[in-house]
Length: 353
Image 1 (tube, rainbow, N blue to C red):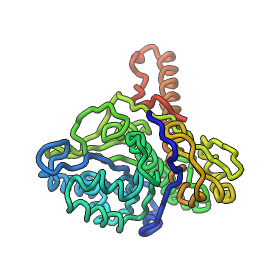
Image 2: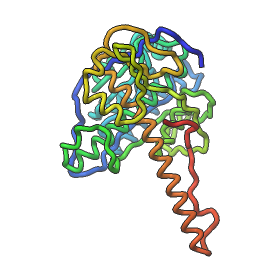
Image 3: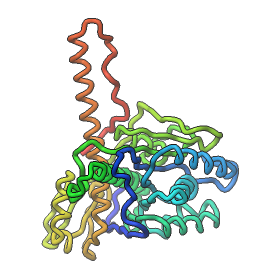
Image 4: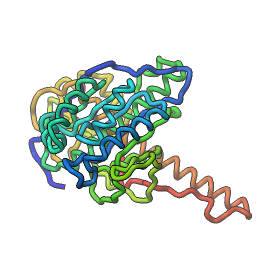
């Protein structure tokens, strides 16, 4: 990966709507949704042809109508992102947007290409969203790593919301002092608009589907090319996760690495540690942060989302390993058991915290 000096490690997070979803505390079947997909083309070429917009809007609405979704997390590029976000807003869900870098640069790069109408829709979705989190102040040179990081933050924030819903469903709001639940989660799923192409990039729709798969939760995808019902995605492929350290630079030059959810919880509990510090979420790729303004409170959303993503993957890996060991142990004690009784670990990432 190419390095880049002078990248500010700050982030923005602004509330643009309601702060919390309307939760039915009598049931824990609410679903938190992460979404992603292709940018729409200006014509009938590409991975998401222009004329397929209407059929996909209908399929997205049908998918939403059959799932008890409370909130959605994703970006807001022209095409799949905006179509899903618009339908979520229409049906009253809380839409939480994550941008990889500043709004104007993202608008030029990921929206303007598809035409003026998408620029208006982009602004409208942002105005009606529940929250907006920006990963970097400015657009770094290594865009692939930035987009990959944006997805990891979005998935991590969805994991945190899933845990919050579960705690509310147990009617124990005092536990919400910590957003990182150690208990069984509520439901979580991913919806994507995908053409079926298996790419080898670290960023994009297919890698984003592999990232979600690594958490152990289900992905449903709609074809961006032909009419279809939502289908379940499952692959043995893995995606290369980048070793993105989270580093806190204090006012006196001290460096402190953050590697667990507990680290972030302690950080949130002591605002003095943030008031005169810089947080570099991508230290190994872009280099250390430079001196600048103090970190706004919104920095916590990005850091927490990133750590929650990797922690969720590590938890799922450990659970899978324990299940395999349990199955193998059972097989040894059962002479009639099949040699193939051990479950297969799929989507295991090549690197975790």
